[in-house]
Length: 204
Length: 240
Image (cartoon, rainbow over all chains, first blue to last red; front, side, top):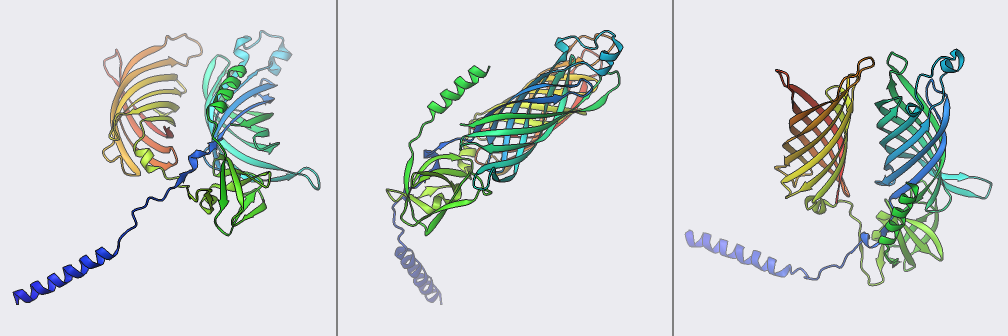
């Protein structure tokens, strides 16, 4: 009985060894090229000018710089710096009283970061036969607002319409809302500060 | 400022100049789009055996030159072309091996610092896949006070090879508190801070990591009781 079992195991091991011996893998490495041999241009540097309406303080000129990194074709991350100078409130204009803020306190500055999502990539037809690539994106983020001698957290959200003049140069129309709490007029309130600005951006 | 940025920009563009790559189409055909995105129409088709020149990459797209015209080829379609030496392309976005071998990590996180909105910038150095040290600067603006803190921490990741991997650690640093008062001028306070953190790291894709964490800090005050503060945060890191 025992030798019989041994014979079966011997036969089994021999057949499996033969099967292994037949499967000889060719030992040649497949030469694969990495996509990293190509330059990547995922960065976008932009500047824009426009109007910012600072709640209670009228509208003023806005200057903003932004640096974006495209994670993929849908999402991008942006660091932004924006500045403006607030005007006078209606109260200051009408009452003739002493101004509420000093000149340096009227400097409005924002720095922060946001995440954008490209919702509508496509073509814009400027005439019957002429189309340009364009894209509409939505973004949301946060940062700091330095205004009226106070530093507060601000939420930023908005949308950006981008028109590609060439493959690396884009024209941008940006609508943005900076939402933050102010205590300038004694009691705390949430203000919406809307801006509309036109700019250019380059890919590199 | 702008001049400096332009200088950086020009340095950047000169530093990375790679040659275009000549390829031939190995699949039956590839679609060529007018722009770098799925929303831009297919304006040309290159059929098997035709030659393309790969110029640059932009996120999921590759700019190509075909019959003296520029077009965009989907990055995923790089598997449909071969170089003139018949070499195929590797287009995997999953760089888990590079993730495990990373040494530097920079992060941005948003969260809640004891009831006020907080955000944090951090830079980490990995001694090994298991041990890393991190310097974090954070700012929180609350109703009562503004807080700025700088902390140095050491984190341990017991299972660094998992895609979703937990970590824990301890750290210490300083916290500067500026009370937000309207009528009376209150001086800023500087306090020492000691913390413990528990969190999760998730490898997303390419060089991105998602992070979430809970941190409990003890603020050493000169009063009889020390203060304890909870921080919740969520964000991402990029690694190099």
